Length: 348
Image (cartoon, rainbow, N blue to C red; front, side, top):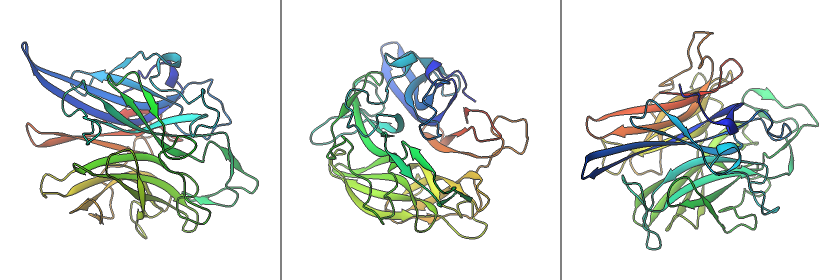
């Protein structure tokens, strides 16, 4: 597991977003792996919602196994801080990373396997609003009456960079700078929009998957937005809300990684963090022929936390991120742990 995460994340961290860059040079093939992640330090505001979000950092690796934290220009080495310059911003109390990738559109030419062109970071965060969650059944636990959470009203934004280290926020359509707003009262995603991942299905067809908590069903659920340029988005509604009974995601599904299915032209695989009826988090798999309609491959998880009580990833695991290796057809699954019984880290 990765644990040397930088000072800004010395209390907790997670959510690996990993890209492998390969290019040919005069000296031979060059390979560099990059991992963006979020975390918070021991002095981070304790009134902000309890999560690994806070600031975004970057680590690099020559092989995707041994990682070194990069010292960014933001607080304690982060590469993206909460927005302290605009009091009306959507992410003034904490920030997180959902996806980073090069995107090519009619407006912007992005990167592919090479580093060096503009990169899009789909980030998210919360502001100072105190959100009343009294009585909600979240992940198998009923929230006591009178409970409110600062920073829970998360929204999704976009930042751009030419080097992956220095990022500039791009103003979105919502007055807070977010790309779009949470749902209206009574809609499934009225509580928050967070943890975005994006696929470019074709030149002008982008799909964003994000999650929220549907108070009407007491399930963490995944929604879909669509865009022609990766910047302006239109919601398409909820697409997944988990299984039933003994399914790994009986209480819903949340963070995910979507990759092209090597066995299906135009199809996709979605590795999903699910919450079972006991509140335990694990990773399962959905498939799709078109990136729009999805089917669960099994009620059982692909990967669960260790049964060893002394292991760093004992208990719940989540935040899956998959990197296919084109040279041999294999892939690597990265994940986070750090629940009540584990310790913060990223494993493979």
